[in-house]
Length: 545
Image (cartoon, rainbow, N blue to C red):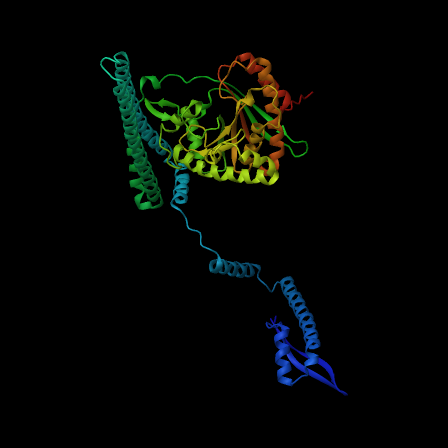
């Protein structure tokens, strides 16, 4: 099959009373534009200038028609050779593959593999190998070291607080006699400075220990993986595993007791009318932090993690992640309430895969300023007059940039929690205490967006606080709970049906979390309401006669 051919081009034109014919060979397809070829012909044959435009149009038409004819002929010949079996399909595929690869190598920007990517792949392969137990035990051993240092810190700070309290009480009793007002103020300032100094010292020690553990853990993982890849080093690999397994701590007496029993029920449901999808629902009554705390048990007198931790570690770099929604206030810190307790749970062990909680908060704070600036610009474009009135208020721009609003949420990633990989921190205000909130409430709409993210990014298990509270309060009467539960069930059901288009027909697990302290009767009523709103997957019983 020829790639090109030469065809004579004929052009007639009149000059005075004479009719002249120009015949030139033209290569088809021609890499040059028709205008360049016309210029060369006019100069070479001394053609009159008034025929130049007409010559260009006819030459362009000729080149286009002949090129299309040539391509059609070549295509027909190629198809005929393919039908006759003269062309090897594998050779054609190889040719195109090589051509595409060369094109990509020449022009595409090469992707550099980061150390984090290498470590994640190595860890994922090692966690699915015989070294699984050893990896978890190594993490647990490091966690015990961190826990011991935290206990020492707490004792030191408690002793400092007791001593400072005694000194301040003595100073207040003897104010005006033994101590002047200036001396009392100096004593208070000295106490603050000493507290900050001691806290900074312990924070530095904990940070250094975590950095050391993270470095040692990564080196150990990479070294063991290297040993497994080399047959000559298989003995070294086994020795590393056995040496670490034999150094596990023995269980304390308080670790041998039974675990706390929590109320829970599980259901299998169907969603959709034509294309049905099957999902798992679980109703839990427990403290939200119980899903984050590491719980240990013993086998043969040795302390080992519970199976939940095993599942969390194995699915860390997979498409089967677990998430949790935690209700928080509008301050981006971990100083009060549940956020402080959650921070304490996170600091009980080193996170070997992600930055610690405070570092993630610092990154979120930087992004928050940009997000609020974008939100203000968007609001200004919608309603410039209202924004201009608000901008004249006494609130500083710096304070606005740090504000979180009801319905905002931010997420943190963790590898050192018991049953959770991702935590969605959902901001809520006092308006959720009302019993008559609707499905258009900002918090409800944010839950829709969170479920949408879960369906998109391989988060197959998500825990949702059913009452939108982390603990029971006096306002939560039985009618209030029933109304809130009905709203949440119906909204989540609608969101799941809506988001099925994003995540295909993969099975998901939704855990509805009820705060501890709820009565068994109310829990049973919630369970009954779930079965009425969702369509359960009941087995079909066939009786043979």
